[in-house]
Amino acid sequence: MASADQLINAFTTLLVTIDPPGLAPIFLGLTTGMSRSQRTQVALRGSTIAFIILAVFALFGAGVLGVLGISIGAFRIAGGLLLFWIAFEMVFERRQERKEKASEAAVTRDHIENIAVFPLALPLIAGPGAISATILLAGTLPTSVGKAQLIAVIAANLLLTFLMLLIAERLDRFLGVTGRAILTRLLGVILAALAVQFVVDGAKAALNLISATPH
Image (cartoon, rainbow, N blue to C red; front, side, top):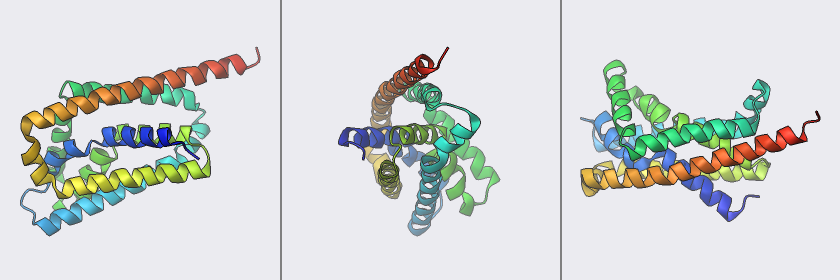
């Protein structure tokens, strides 16, 4: 069973990588011209699909790594570096621009009903950062109870994301440009610290593996 600290760490890591407040203005852009009920349907479908994707990686991500011969230590280092890059983009305001470009490209190619799947569920909610974070967190919670707790944490994050999308219009007006910039940078700094911790843990695991290997 995971400790309270582990669960808080898992919740914070996923919350920062998914970044619900940052998704709000992009969601508004994606659903321009839709009624409130249509926006609710898109938000619900996108959040549900993203939950399924992350839950699958929580359950089977480590197994896939094992088949590929990748140690969890090595993945922690790689995942930590990826999360650090996302944090860097958040602090220096590059992530939002990239997400907006992804959403613009999708609207021109896909029918409006498919927006919930692409780009909302994948890659805007369950993006590479969230998937990497999920596999990393699953490695720290190896028991079946731990996995169940992680899935509950994912569900809580996606429920919060869904609620944020429902109030996207009001949230965007309340935060404004300055509020969004401050919040994004603050979350970026927190994510950078979590990412460094993943790299440190991965390096420790890799060194322990090397020292345990008979020469």
